[in-house]
Image (cartoon, rainbow, N blue to C red; front, side, top):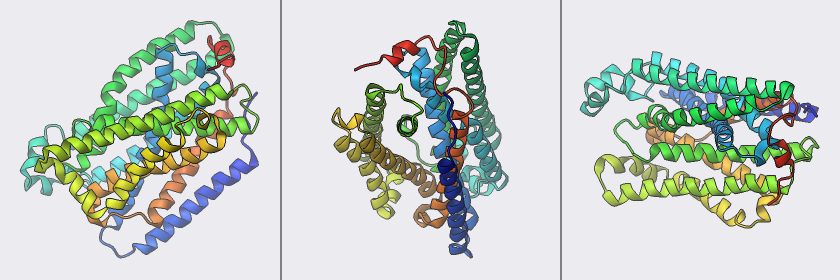
Length: 395
């Protein structure tokens, strides 16, 4: 069975895009005359672009992980995972555009290490220039994005070919490529977070930051997979998905919420306990000026999943998973936003029409890409070697 994008889904996408554009315009007018308007636009665009790109990348990581570990239960939802990861090339386009604008404007007060005048008067940044400079930044960024695109394109091509020719050759090729991708991703998932996010707070560093952003990325991706799987099942397209599949997806969202929370607490606790000036500065501005946002974001991402997804029944209940999933996704968007906005704008950062408008606009594009990818191939892979095992999955 092939998925068809319904009129209702198309209407929702158009509504998200229209409201997103309207809110963005209202946001521009509300901040008109402010000297940091251009910076605010770029901050909003960067944080939202990173958020959706990370979700797609997290889904692709999960796909590679399933291949590398020879997992069987996921086969029936493989096309959902592939469709979420299909946003990768679009995410690359948005990120390249924003990085290019920021680079041409000497950092736009976001990456201050790109501004020659700032660097000339800052000894700390000068000590980091062998790594933090425009040329090396772009080399690394191109390597990251190029690697992701090449692997994603090859995985998708082999998956569609497998539907036609069957056998195990393509599967084992993906198995090998999945293991190779995980090696690259083990490095890139941390270094890209240093380059794209941690370098915004250029005087600050954390050895846990890469793991922290990775945990948020993976948790958000699994939550999106849950929501799309439930949406498709409700509309009669994934009848073969049973409660055990939903339970497994729910367990991933539940467990990864704890992983993210553990990373958040570990990073915070170690820096608070050491009380070193160069490290606590990151938390000082967030606690002094954005206490509600910062601790509220942690509360949303930790306590809601812990309290409401603890039981077995909750992980199998579509309504509970949907509500908690939406809460988790909002919480992790707030996390990405605070990392980018507070680090670059300081006390002047805020969430208003512009930020919400950008989020809704990108959300509409994100859903559009995923649903159209779902409609481009059979909703259930035809010749996956583990499909029969997945169809009879019971826990």
